[in-house]
Length: 277
View 1 (cartoon, one colour):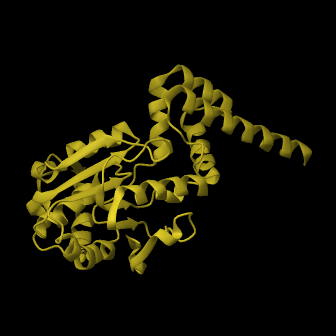
View 2: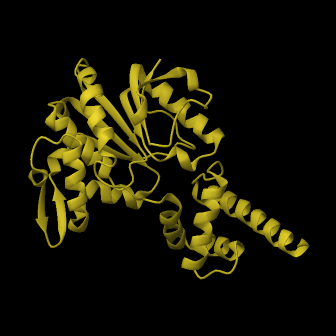
View 3: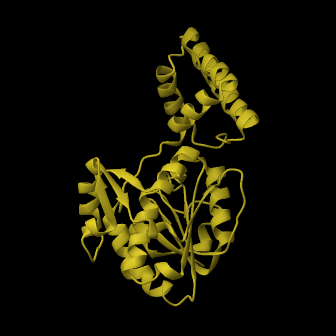
């Protein structure tokens, strides 16, 4: 029993040293990410890198930037889909868009945009509602490979059937095929959808606010943060949003128990859509 405790304790120390080493060497800050989430991803990385210990993994990524980039892909989980949770996008279309129309120009921040599925979903929705031409979208993530893929707007046709069903359930007004060209097993999305999109490297853990926005979407990112980092993120969102701006979160996320819980009020509670108080 004591031996098992010692092994677990050593593993905890190694994990903390690895996270600190990543921050000091590469300036990626995972120190306030959820402990259980990070531990799960690192354990998966051990098998992927064929390392017996976290210390061995640390040695590898400290001395090999390519290995670190491979680890970063495992740590940031770039998983998404277009019009994910269709009822969420339908609520934006019905409840938020009419209010966005009252602004002469619109700025939207998609924080943790991953490989861009939500960016293109939002752009399509705004185009159908006649708002895309007067909207600037800031799409940010800490993973440079994910951002590069998002810029390209090329997705596997294997996923497009599910995307099409999501789009239709989200109140889509056209044929989803109008927005992409199919070639060699891939869907290449209309480049005009990203003409008003700025893709940028941004960390909610270390970076500051860069613009006033009318809407911020940060879905399924905060669940990987501990409370301290969640509070920091909500602080950034509160600072960035204009008076009565909109904050949209993932299905398991809420500002209610954060330091900014009284600074946001629900607009569509079930779909995690809030307004700045």
